[in-house]
Image 1 (cartoon, rainbow, N blue to C red):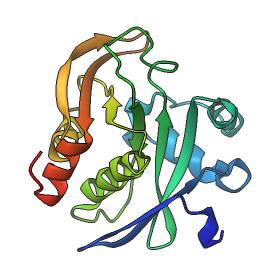
Image 2 (image 1 turned 30 degrees about the vertical axis):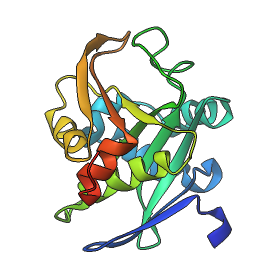
Image 3 (image 1 turned 180 degrees about the horizontal axis):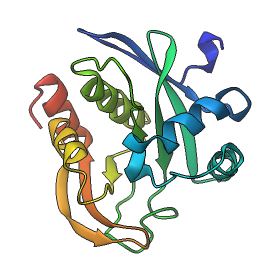
Length: 192
């Protein structure tokens, strides 16, 4: 990997450098399988899938014109997964009042034997910052499982506002939206 492979970088004042690069299925398949099938990733709904099945699912994402996947790096090493998608074409089609500039995202911090205080907050800050680094992005839209209270708290910490539950084929989700202004207010103290 070279610096030109990086799509986004940010320095967390406490935890150091975070970066985002495209998912490389040849390089990342084994790591990806371990992450998404771990019991901690239950909300990812991929438990029991074989390495080939996980690779096939992510190949669909990588090849989809409105959905992509990335590996997040911490201090130069793979440390989290993120997906970005057009919610008017993937995941949320017809389920909410979309606006121009809406971008959907998912993120996963894999299980670890040595948790680092503040790591997941630094990751979601990196992920939302990455999505909003595109000037065309105006709002970030997420739809986590309504039971996933840990991610709801993280979402709130970076400026997401719940817009109510929605029913998706695979889950009952809490639709939440974060504007660029709310993200900046939550993460830098800038007034919206």
